[in-house]
Length: 302
Ligand SMILES: Cc1cc2nc3c(=O)[nH]c(=O)nc-3n(C[C@H](O)[C@H](O)[C@H](O)COP(=O)(O)OP(=O)(O)OC[C@H]3O[C@@H](n4cnc5c(N)ncnc54)[C@H](O)[C@@H]3O)c2cc1C
Ligand code: FES
Image 1 (cartoon, rainbow, N blue to C red):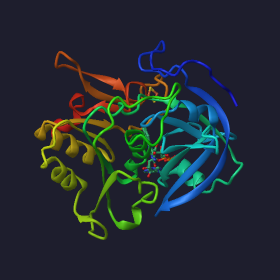
Image 2 (tube, rainbow, N blue to C red):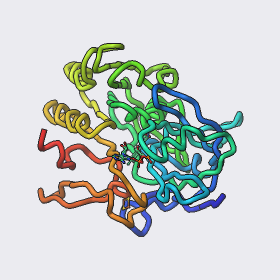
Image 3 (cartoon, helix red, strand yellow):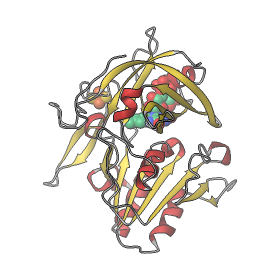
């Protein structure tokens, strides 16, 4: 396994690059089923686990062979620790949609993988009275770490980050098409977390979109509310619009397809509004994947 002892910040030579990102050859610790077509993989990677923060991601692929040639990006679900609290590995949740995710669902303990990270900026440290996380589909995965950190139940990063202000309330609004795709509800059964569910077909929780749950939360008009969101792009565009109308600060984590993950190929660009009102393309892998919603252009079409 390769190690990097660089301090873990984002002020490396290329804008947005994470200085401590490193390639690790690591082993699969296990794969557990979370929901229909959905699994959670654990990877033994202590160095990565000690540095990664919620909302950051890593690129992963099999250590051997050339198919697939390129790694795929996955967000941190949570870090794993030994009985002394020392970080031992990372977990990530995934839906089987294509080539690598099909291979991953058959991974066995001991399989060798190549993992490159930590990458990206991650969500800002919570600094508000009320934090609402809005997740659509597999977009719930970055929020386990966000929520545990916000509730003061776990710390991340090296040196360990401190939450400037512990929110008075933390809510997860989580929407999926149908009950069978609800993933990780046991993991999200955390003291202090209010979980609100929505399904498109009404099989569990609110019958309708997760944006309905968000509107209900925002109707309470609680001051100093921040919204973090991750999910399919149309859902994030709708969340951005709801927040804009309610004048609530919102951050979105994009799931733009990526080829390199470290700023070299420009396959991941998205339109970002500049301070002077013009727009430019920004690389989601190094300047994101988390952006303030009012800096992204896609919500303008909603
Ligand atoms: C920052 C970031 C974090 C992410 N975090 C997560 C996460 O935590 N969990 C998660 O599940 N996903 C996450 N994703 C998305 C994840 O990276 C993709 O789902 C993954 O790359 C799919 O890899 P794959 O090899 O299985 O699919 P690929 O084979 O690369 O296919 C990708 C897509 O193309 C479609 N496709 C494949 N072959 C064909 C074909 N022949 N014709 C038409 N369509 C086809 C597939 O259906 C699929 O939708 C994240 C993405 C980003 C950018
Ligand atoms: S994925 Fe290559 S520049 Fe972002």
